[in-house]
Image (tube, helix red, strand yellow):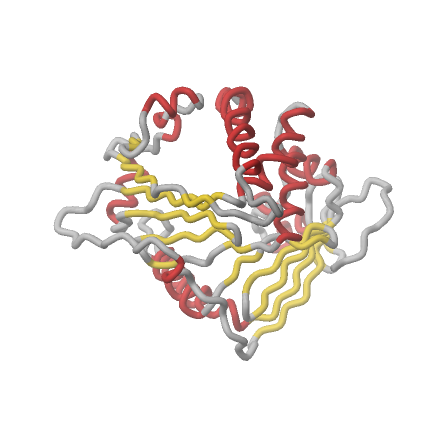
Length: 317
């Protein structure tokens, strides 16, 4: 809560001011302009303490940011080192968020104007801010943020004897391409309603009853009360998840959200990275390699339905 409060009181006003300046610097005709920021390198020490060598510490202090607030546990850093995760790169562009691990491209999150605007309207409903701060976030900062191209690389300690993996060359040349159509092999159609307590049901049977019959603990599949309250309070009646050869598409109600746009290459590299993580339970790597590379061959349509609290029903997308 202290970190959220500090963000709201210090960082947000600074970001809003920057956004206003960016907007003012746009072309006279109102067309989009992209500001490419220098790549930021964050080094994480073995004890989990991050340091930003390329940014003046005084600038971070003025923004109310202390890198030590983002400290990782030494155990997590060791697991990443043992997994030979040397660096993680994040690239925020006008069309999406791209990421790499050891220069291997993972599945990017991409958006268009409609899906970005829908997320812009959703985010404030899940944040604790006053009306003025929410207005500045929705109407100024987030729209103007799309004019920034930010590149952050988080580097971790290298394992003894490991060969150094070079960083990805900056620029759009290495961005992953969209996937191509492929033959689907699996079809899934599923509607999962949740009751007021957050308990899902399948084909009219409560998951609690299913768990009791199978002597399984299904409590992890129940939506926490606070989360369900936030979802219904935001007016979300249903979430739709669809797999296509090009990616995983999402909707809240009938409004599209950003897409996890995969291809055969990014599915394979994502599976390789995830399967190599030492923090996963034993045997998980085999499950990941058996399913993740073939997600683009699935034809799934899953709908999660939440209580409407008496509101008029919104049609599915």
